[in-house]
Length: 263
Image (tube, rainbow, N blue to C red; front, side, top):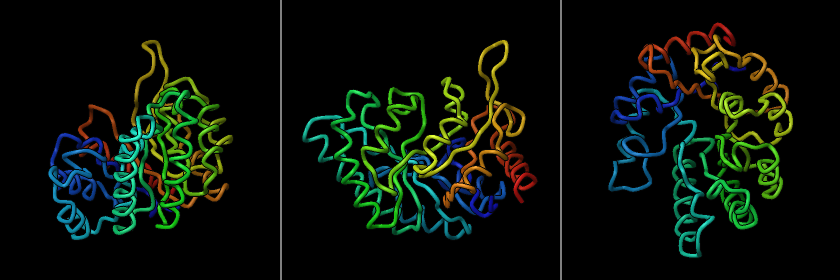
């Protein structure tokens, strides 16, 4: 794993202004950032923030924007008007990603119900063609829904779209929390990885608990080695979600751990 492909998520600073979030990620050691796709961070609604100012500030900090954590795609499970509006939003997100040099954006698999697969696959096939022409990858997060939390419908979606620029945002911790074998899922979907989020957790007497990176049951070294072995060229974004220590401290500790693991 090339440590220069490591990025930090702004998610733990989701209630703080984007400038503060970017500064905290940079101070934690990262030179790449995964932007949360809603206000007060990145929003496709120009009324919710000045995207050009955000991009300029990231550049001034020496931060490369690796991924836009948008929520585009949900409307593809709606009526014709919702689908058209979602298509326009997705194209805008892809255009911004391409202009900013971001490799990928996060998408949402419709309403995350397997019943919508037949409806959303043609739209994502069209979206993937547009994204490929722009050099951008689309990934839906393994997030515990009817599609995003079960291996069979995830496979049905990626195989239905059948594009090298469409796949999953692989989060092994989310999968484990949802009762899915994260190793088996990576093996099954190894040719369809668009982006990666990494955190850690473990099952104990009180159920599932998030942990500091390296203290849970996710084998981060194995994940990185398998991704490299299968030719994954994208980022691994560290997604800090713990309440303690505060994210300023915790994310820096995670970066230091990753340096020891992969540096």
